[in-house]
Length: 75
Figure 1 (cartoon, rainbow, N blue to C red):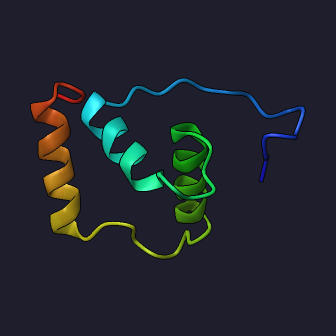
Figure 2 (figure 1 turned 120 degrees about the vertical axis):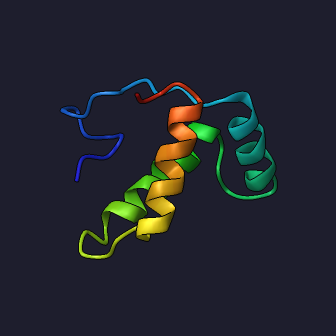
């Protein structure tokens, strides 16, 4: 897995709503995470370590799709 020190790693830009960023900032306050970016990368990396496990139930996925649709991210 490519890490930040890996010269072949490329940075990407993602967009998060202000509400999500504020919630993450609140969650990481007083922890070792230096930024929202560091926390998001950590959480996603942990999810990807378990490829055989479904991160979401069918109902979770359906709710997520509805939420993304209502926010205009998907059609």
